[in-house]
Length: 153
Image (cartoon, rainbow, N blue to C red; front, top):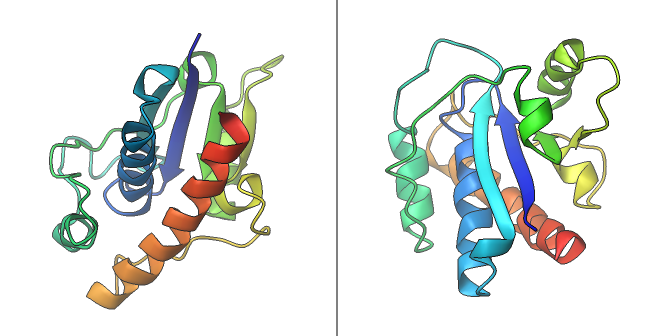
């Protein structure tokens, strides 16, 4: 039986796609690919069908992680049925997801860093900054994914 994890940010072209790529990379390296279903989504709709931000692709590639094939999609109510864990990058997206939660849903809904045991802070959105923001973001995501993998495997 596999564990399903969905990483969620605002547009699904920066943070959540980096988290999907980093978590997938860690499971691959440990031979745990078949134990996890991994995806990402955004609560906003404006980037649906787009690839990741080029700065994110580059930051991930610098660490040997290929996210260039990912395509943005919007978070939806069906994700509560399809995933065991829904992990939001910030409080705003967590609130947006909570508003869509169906009555009676037992799906774990949490902040990414809080679920990872790294506090209740947010992963900063690097979209409006430079490449260094993506590196900072990926450092947090990498540490979080490491802890989440320990927790779930």
